[in-house]
Length: 444
Image (tube, rainbow, N blue to C red; front, side, top):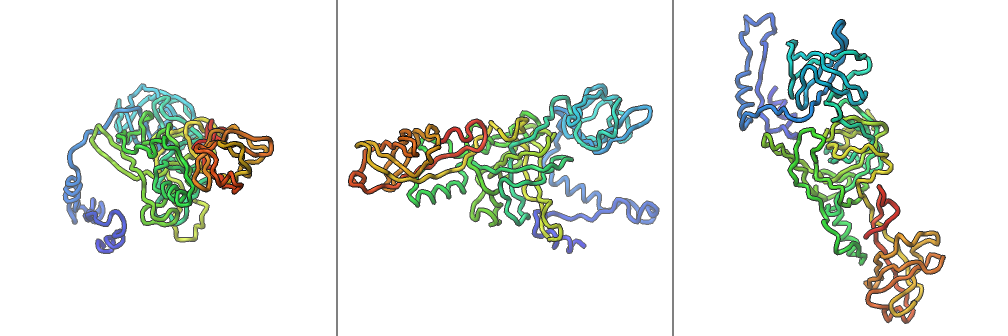
């Protein structure tokens, strides 16, 4: 049996793990006298202890959070919620909240393994009795300290493709997103830091084509993804290095994990999500090359920092394939309208092409073919353009009402243009997708 199991898990991350045969009750409860005491338990404990560097005290700080998986009435007492304490402490008499119902109730009593207790802490399997509550309103969900768990309809999340998913994880597609006990449909928009290798490859390709863009003053090009943060489910924790002040580049699909060529071949993960729990001195690292904006069809209630899994349950169930597409953590919940998320700056690189119509003076040319006559030229005014000869100019404004525009050349009009040989004009700029800058201001 051990050989068969070893062969089955050889290609997984558990390929090198030890196997310990155990039997808690050999032969069953009726034959304890025949087969004696449990088998292999001491060996199992010894192997587990060998993997533990030092004993760690159970963390009891933070706001109370209970994952309740059962709810039932008890006549003469009230309604009992059973579940596991994920964080913090709770005492008899405390006020707790059922966030998705927007209800607050007083804890009447607590039990741990059928023993009455006055306090429960993280890790405890607890039964919590509350009064004046209809058990039919609650099946499973979260119980928390009042005001600590938000409900939101959009969120910025870290995103990593699941390597067993063989398809392409496209942006602007709908996925089934599971957070805790809830599964909700959501639309995902992926984005990454401009310093990501995929972005640099795009920039290099543009430079090879003679198309330059970006400002020399643009900095930083990459996000700092090595900040120490707390892994505990704390609302104030900065779960990743996502920075609202930075600009991010839109990604048409989620970058592939190493060894998967379904999306961006040869692109490695750009940054590392480093999560450190300073109180117990543990560091957990995972790749974090891409973020996503998830827009949910209905409100989701969970703490910031919660893990989620996005799936394609609409895929063919008869195919032998994984339907779990990507996963990550909730970083920045937003209670605002998801159609107007203002705290992230996501852009796509756009190109426009035109040509020199005629020379206006020794420093200025008139361009055409780049804009329509109804285009608002004020949002493009001041942007740099390049000629096919490598000359640099600036859009000074509209010229007339037919879509023509003035371009002031830094080094003056070239002799070739003076002879009537029209140059090609190239404009590269950032088009923002969300927030107050969307469609109103163009940057380079």
